[in-house]
Length: 77
Picture 1 (tube, rainbow, N blue to C red):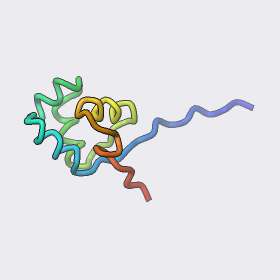
Picture 2 (cartoon, helix red, strand yellow; picture 1 turned 90 degrees about the vertical axis):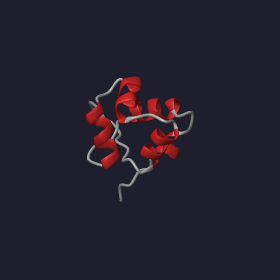
Picture 3 (cartoon, helix red, strand yellow; picture 1 turned 120 degrees about the horizontal axis):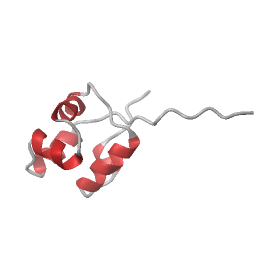
């Protein structure tokens, strides 16, 4: 029996993402350049209109020298 490929795990953001960006003294533009994404994606993450895939969540955690749990939390009920 063939297995279906699992959909990428999505993690919803919380306000900690923006807090860390500000703590590190980064603008949305500077952070987007450092992480290799668009500035609009950073805005969407901070506003809750977009959610990162798990691989990006790990990249963000490494960038901020913390854990994924510290930056993001799963808000799905």
